Image: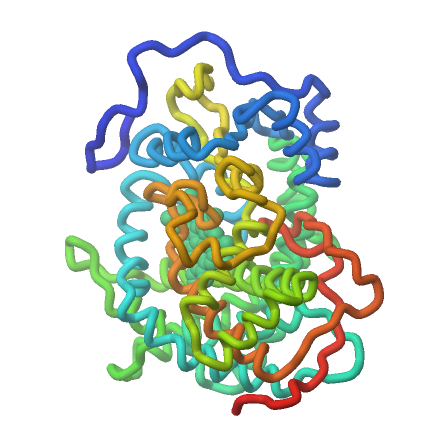
Length: 464
Ligand code: HEM
């Protein structure tokens, strides 16, 4: 039954066939372990065996239907307006961190209100204005990268995207507050990751009993998470209070836009909603974009001709090529592998019937590797995004439907702003094992398993 006020065409065709999509018969814990060990290999193997729509069983979900076909994926996305609940699918894992008012975990009217309020800060005109501050942050950090000795790249980009979130999204300017948040937030995210791994491997009924117990037991991941969350929240609430007091109308950061946002009744976001919104944007926007940038340079190091073309584009200020490079990175290495919805009614899909209460999830990591949709899918070729070669429905690294990534435009802008600051300052070469990196599941992202070890060499004729 729909909980949304917007009506749309019905999601169901008149007759739903009786069977659920096929899938592996191994017990749930075995499938969960296979998925954690090699998510991509496991899903590709299922796709080869069962076709573009198949069922896997993870702990705690009655059945998860994976969808590797753009038409079917878009049918799933269309359930966002009535029977598909993306918030419910994420809530167990994310709510301890993002709180009860997060766009990520809400559904229905509550989600719609938050989406409208937060959406006001992500309009194109606002987002374009962030290019210059992001480029400055990246330039200052890359200038400090050590050269001539091995470093890992993903943490370097995490530092850049964290500073972007703190300055451009949170709008923090106080240096002590910046220092403490820069110290605490990565620890809070790491603690969340440990907690999620435990939760993933524990049946939900048991977790509900264990979690309060472990939170009271010192030195457990649960207790560490609770301590870090309290410490971070205290600083964030201080920042919100100070910003409510100061009438800095010329500010352009996202928190400032949220402070002045009003819903249809003229009501503003309260402190708790603002805290949840900031942590939501941190969680959704920091690690995802850093991981995408790390993958981009990993791919460039294995594709020297593309790297050379990218460097020319950086020097020439060719934003179109750099955006195409970001898009091809997200095609070949999607950061979020699947986008589940929990069904509140059965769904007819691809000749099967997916029961109520099951999860159904479009999987870009499967569709993006399709030779029918992307000729020579294994080739890293940004040019495919400069022509009309790519079917609009086939590329879905930011999901789709009404729950599509709120920060998609921001993320592409951030990537295309950071790339030239690196390309014009340093040449990166693999450190140690030069084999391509394998994707590995970290929290919600598919990240390079070794975090991309590199040696940076100063660019012979740097642009300043
Ligand atoms: C390369 C970087 C990024 C990738 C790959 C990415 C990907 C995604 C995906 C796949 C979803 C779920 C979509 C769905 O279920 O259909 C999502 C949701 C979301 N993303 Fe992103 N994202 C990125 C960066 C960002 C940034 C920079 C922000 C904000 C600063 C952001 C904010 C959000 C929010 C708030 C949602 C929840 C939307 C909702 O449920 O209404 N993301 N993102």
